[in-house]
Length: 386
Ligand code: NDP
Ligand code: MG
Image 1 (tube, rainbow, N blue to C red):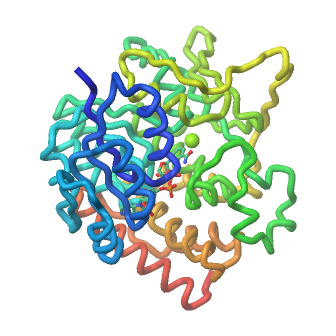
Image 2: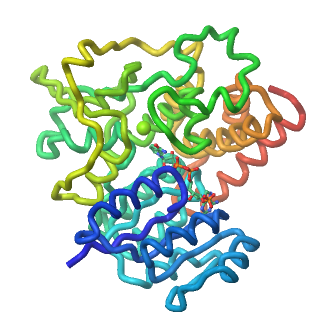
Image 3: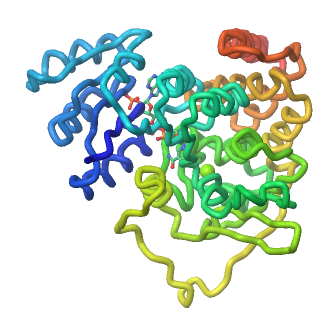
């Protein structure tokens, strides 16, 4: 029987790579549902090729345009706040959670509540709601399979039976497009310059996060929640070649890592096939050609967002939710050229300082903190007080 897959965020970078793998294995996978924000044109092409049973389009104008142009009479087309639950009324074995930002939270929760396993690309949902998601998955006895290359690497080499014997996790980071620039050179960086990642091709938001290294900060928080390991045992190492995707060190001195060319189709195919493996046409590593790999410590002065993420974890409770919301606002404003690149970390720091840190006991709490933090960040930007 084919594995039934639903993709939330099918028109994005991860969504498209997922469909690319499914396209190579028509005997193994069937697409059940697709969801997008507004890109109805790309969705029309995906529907023609993969024939899902249901699609959801969030943007009302795109929803109308899609309905007018669609010719598939059997396709159910929906939008609205309960659309993710409706998609999951169609039996699905695995949800690829590939929406960007905390907009991906409700879809992830909907899937887990239905008892559907998740391939998790959307790190922000975990960062903003943390242990709520992992405990929901546990109570429903479903898997959260990490798509993020670093977490996927750790998942592949983590010996669950010996988890208490782990001495360290090492998250590798490429250092982004500005690795060789000085802080002073970053003042007048444009969104186009920040989006150009040296190793990975990704959506806009995560590309900016990679340039500020907030991406690694979010991944640090993601790793703490996913693997139940304190931030004190997690080290970030800059590894510009992006070949070693992360490492687990055990108390006996063994360090295990997963390697591969930087191509998200490897971790995505791992999650689609789990617990088996499938073939991909990803370029193979040629160790003779690579010859050497380099590693060094990140500079917190140059990458203050990374330090802020460690700080948010130390503060605990709602601090990671606040950090994430403020970052989403700041990145959006930078992409719209309304603030400077170096202001992103300042706005996040100021929002953290101005917010009261509270306990998070429910998804309602997460949404309230997320909304409130966005308001605080927007106000800081409006006042120019950063
Ligand atoms: P993209 O920006 O390329 O794609 C985002 C997808 O989500 C699109 O399908 C978009 O629809 C949809 N979407 C955006 N906002 C909303 C919303 N408010 N409601 C519903 N749908 C929405 O992002 P990426 O694919 O790069 O990243 C997706 C997630 O995966 C992020 O959380 C990112 O951090 C994570 N990730 C990505 C990696 C990568 O290599 N790209 C690597 C590791 C993690 P539309 O096209 O219509 O706008
Ligand atoms: Mg990553």
